[in-house]
Length: 301
Image 1 (tube, rainbow, N blue to C red):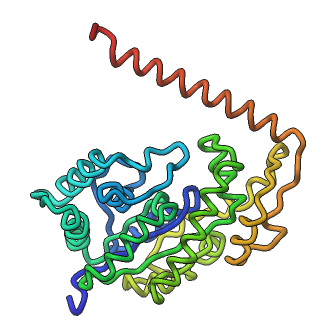
Image 2 (spheres, rainbow, N blue to C red):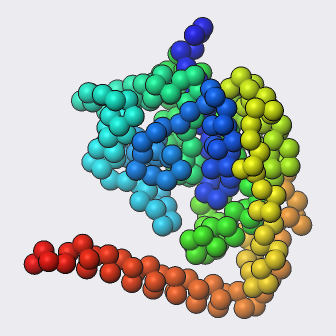
Image 3 (cartoon, rainbow, N blue to C red):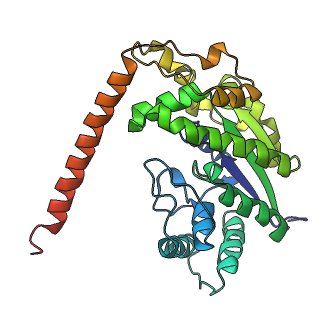
């Protein structure tokens, strides 16, 4: 290769914002690859949150998540990730060499374009700091970032339907994530392409700067992963009555969302419905955990 030995494309978004669809779209291009072995879903590595844990950097506890992962586990995870994907890997004693050297090896292994995505990174500024550091420490890697945004009402409603996390709680993570994205985008000097999920679904060619980076065109991708039906599904839920924080609406408006797009009908039954549904879901989850624990420990005594 010329100046850069390999390219690295990182999707930065909050959960339920379309990052899996975006990843599937891009990995349909022959030049784009992601890790083959990871203990997480959707080919995610949580690499930079684990790196932050290893280095003892501050992270906020995320809703219904293992993040922040304890230091020893994070280091073991990163070594296992590298050994599983590289075939053979002898971890160094120096943690920074493990982190930045390991990332370089992954980029070279999955060249020409290594794609990474994790909805955890954007919430943790320490993880973003390490990504910014990698730009300076790994000049032989050509980086580009996708800042993927989705209407917070759609995002929070999807999270509610999938994991029964109350929007009133999840909105604080959304706010942190996209304040971080605004800050990160300014610090990357043109290397970040901001994409709204709704625009990507309507016209995948909005990703042209990304296609240019991976040496592809809109004709090279399979648009079956993009579904317009996912837009504004909350409008069809008669009980949903979430009223977002004014500061969240303000940040969303900076990404081009209108007041109408950010306003849900208020329903006086929503608080009671939310509480009862969440209690029922938690009870079922605790019951499954208890059964799993009993089955795992059956006969050990």
